[in-house]
Length: 261
Image (cartoon, rainbow, N blue to C red; front, side, top):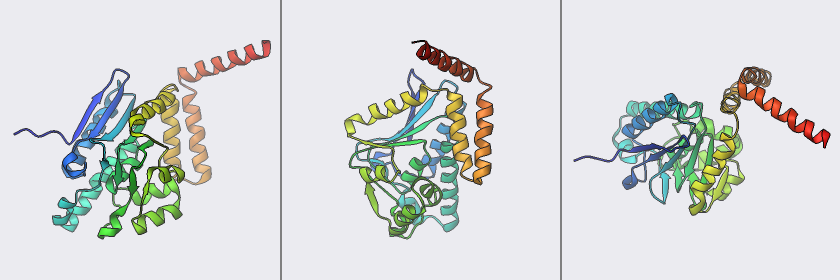
């Protein structure tokens, strides 16, 4: 008997890859095989020059991902749990450093490891009413897929402390208010909003977008001075691209028209 893949991927004519977590029977939960497939898909998209951006979503209308599969964790030895977490960290790092914009289209509840996958994405757009959170502590676990690192970077240590240590879930509206999610929209508008956001990003130079994200991401691990120097390096690198020269010319032409007018 053939089984559906736990991760689906298709790329449209615009070069936008839609990656879908596809385990609806278990609320798109994450197990080692699902992470293995997700990692392979992301690695392939990195090497595919035709792919300009990625949208990551889940099958169904209730859940993006409920997180790590509890059935697996309940029988796994501690060393296997750690190996599973390290596997997930590798996947989230691959997503975060893909070099192309990745939008998490949160089609429903996004919890635990599912939220950690979303936290690694460049942008997060959620359906109104979706619940988000790190309930791990409520079952004696820890956000071990990178959440203890990325959540604080996204929303600050104080708010991250509350969510990680209480296990409280929030709705998409509150997630927008605290900076965890960029936009919350009605379900029927989710993909339209995601594509609108990507339209804005893809209208810009891909090199400028990539270098801006790289400087932002890597700069968080540096001192202010080192991070600023990294930004200066990115500015110098992007000046070598045709898009930079074209952009400068277009700006000057517009300015000249304004002065002449």
